[in-house]
Image (cartoon, rainbow, N blue to C red; front, side):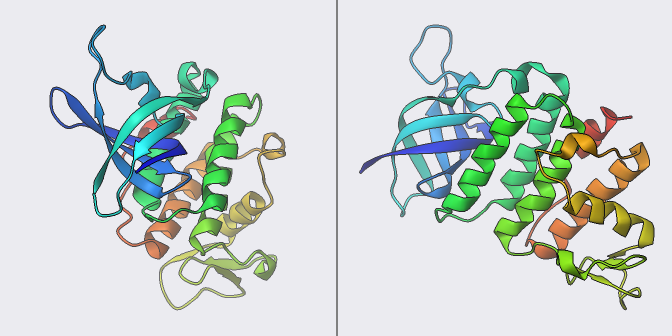
Amino acid sequence: MLSKTRGIVLHSIPYNDRYGIVHIYTEAFGRASYMTACRRGRKTGVPQALFMPLSVIDMEVEHLNTRDIQRIREVKVGYPLHDIYVHPVKNCIALFLSEVLYRAARAREADSQLFNYLYDSIRWLEMAGQGVANFHLVFLIRLVRYFGVYPNVESYRQDSFFDLLNGAFTASPPGHKHYLDRTESVVLARLLRMNYANMSLYAFSRAERYGIIRRILEYYRLHLSDFPEIRSLDVMQSLFE
């Protein structure tokens, strides 16, 4: 059965000389994998530029729940991206976030709220002028809400510790090693007050930025099954040194 849906590209890999597999978070089906024919010169196939990380596309697909790899019948640009592809910092952020989403967004059921969050976030990144260095921090901390593990903001008090296992601030260190010290907890509390509209108003030192992003990813690993180390993190961090 043919269906139309919007999709956000997470990851693409070559399958052989003629075909590739693209992992896409779709509005209609959640995460899905699609076989695509690679275009070579003027030969038929899908332009691979459509499948850059975080590309927003409109698709007509042949989708069967019993099949692991689906088929794309037609595809076109759903929301044009320019700045993300040519701006070195935005491009690196897109690569990093697409890798995180590829590892974190595994559900094969539609989630309109998550899709809308991703779509709106990509538009913000495309249009953002100031505060781009904070974008990935805001994105990641707000993304966990859609996985049901958003931190308890109301529990924050001065000089508290953030318990990574339980997602809450505590007055004293918890009885395990997965927590933020007082200094790190202050940085996280600042981050929890941020959004895309005000992210340009917040400044972090290199050490703060380096530390908090690694701790956020630790939070992901503790709460999301099979969440690995993110290979593109060191490349992205080097942009802000």
